[in-house]
Image (cartoon, rainbow over the protein chains, first blue to last red):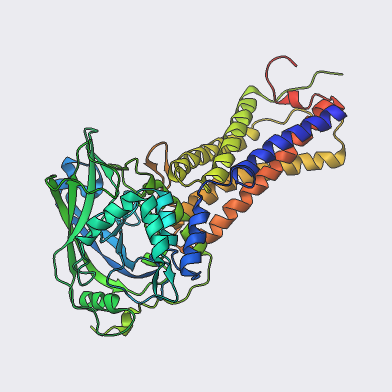
Length: 343
Length: 177
C-alpha cells in the first residue's frame, strides 16, 4: 500500500514539478522573459487595450512586390524569383501609446507581409534608422526604462539615460551613427531597413549574410500643418492620390561583417537591387487587415534564414506575447482614421 | 494468479511512442512560451512533434478498432471499469483535438505550420484574430487537461500495479512479467 502511494507521489512530484518548472512557476526567476517586456512596455507607455505593445500607432497599407529576379542569385525564395507577390503592410511609429502625437524624431516603422497569407510568405518589420540602438534583449529592456519620458519635463531623465549609455557603450556609438542620418520629412521618403542580419540561401545551398533596405522612389508631402497625426495624415493624403514605391536593396555582407545591429557595415559592400514595392492602398486599422498581422521577423520563406543575432529570437517571442494579449482585448478605433484625411 | 494478457505488440509500441512524444511536447510547450531567445526554434520543434502525435493517434484510433483490449484484472470493479473507458476516450479526444487546435490557431494568424525543418502544411482556418485568440486559449486549457488526465492515468496504473499487485502495468509492457 505504502509502496504504491509512495510511487504515485514520486511520479506526481516529478511530472507536476516538471510542468511547474517549465511554466516558470518555480525555479529561476531572474531570466528576462517575454512577459517582462510586455510589463515594461505597459509601465512606460500605459496599457492600451487591443493595440500592439510597441509601434502601437499605425495605419494599414496594401500593394504588391514586383521581384526582378536579381535576388534569385543569392536566394532560392520563390518571392525573389521574377514575378509579383501581393503585400499587406503597416506603417507605424515607435512607442506603446497609440494616441501619442507624431514626433518627427521618433523611429518610423514599416511592417510587410509579402505573399501573405501564402506558405512562402516573407514578413519583415523594419525601421527608418541606419543601425539599431541596442544589440541585446537586455539592452532593449534597459533602454525602454531609461527613455521613459518624465511628465514634468517632457523628456527622459538625463541621469537615467547617462547611466544607461555608460552601461551600454554600443548604444552610445550607435546613437552617433543615427545622428548622422537625420530623419526625412515623412514616411514616403524614409528608407526602411532590416537592421538585423539574415542569410540568403541560394539554390546551391550557399549562405550569404545580408541586410536589406527599402529605398524610397519619391519625396514625401510636407507634414500636415496641425493635429497629432501630422506624419500619418501626409502619408494617407499622398497614398490616396498616387501609389508609393520603394526599391528593395540587399546589402551583401562577408562572413567577417558583424551581425551586431548597432554596427554599420563598410560602405563598399555590394548592393543587389531585387525589385520594387508598390503600395496602392491605405486603410484604417480594422479586423482582417494589417492590424491583425504579427510582423514577426522570423516568418521567413525557404531561402531566407535568420542569423545568430539574439534580438531576432527575442523580437519573435515578444511580438507573439503582444499578439496574444491584444487579440483577446476589446478594441478602440485607431487615431489614424483614413477617411478623415482629405485627399 | 493467472498471467495477464498483453496488448498486441503494435499497440504497445504506439502507446509508449505516444507517451514519450506527448510528455516532451507538453514540456516544450510550457517552456517555450516563457523563453525569450529560443522561442521560435522551440515552436518549430513543438509543431513537428504535435503533428507527429496527430498522425500516431489517428493510427492508434484505427488500430484500436482492430482488436479487443485484454481483459482487465479482477481488481477493477464495475464503477472503475466505467472510469477506465471514460479516461481512455477522453485521452483519445484530447490527443486528437490538441494538435488540430494548435494547427488551426497558427493558421488563423495567416501563416502556415511548418514541420520537419520547413515543410508547410495547408492552413485549416481563416485569417481571423478573434478565432486565433479563442483557439490559443483553448490550446492552453487542453494542455492542462492533458496533464491532469495523464497524471490520473499513470497514478491509477501505478496504484494497481504496486498496491493491488494485479499486474495492471504488464498489459502494456515488454519483456519478462
